[in-house]
Length: 203
Image 1 (tube, rainbow, N blue to C red):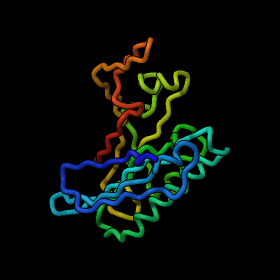
Image 2 (image 1 turned 120 degrees about the vertical axis):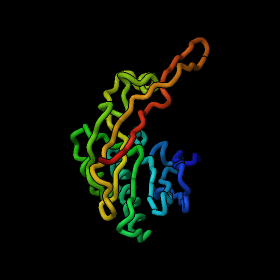
Image 3 (image 1 turned 180 degrees about the vertical axis):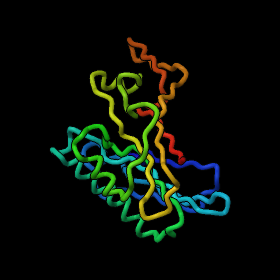
């Protein structure tokens, strides 16, 4: 079993933190203890709430449609958790992470995600995708023939304070060159991850 792989760091004091493991998963994710991390952060005498998550991925070991159904269930778990915390309405609740939902797929799942998480859509800028085998050396190694996808987001819960127009900026940040030697080949990369980071800020 793995540990879910979600972490939140803050330059402001973290006053409360909770790890929640999702009830269900399928395929390889079923052994990964996927879930979300909740933090209550104090900034200048006020509280900000941040949830980071990594939901069910697409997996050939899942039955047809099972991964999508589980993602929807996991997002409802996040929304129900937020409601159960009874967070004051004048405090912001950010929900972000690798949602494994491609907003450019046109299959309706993106709109389902907004509903299940109880969030509004945001304004997008920066790179056109967050997982891009055409420009990301790690993603290209694993999936050289796949199309780019936009999978990572930072939203705000609709029932709490809205920080203005929220912008998500996908940043095609490159790393210093690094390599992995696996006999007899040397693999060279210039990325930190197979996903590009997303910055969120308000106007």
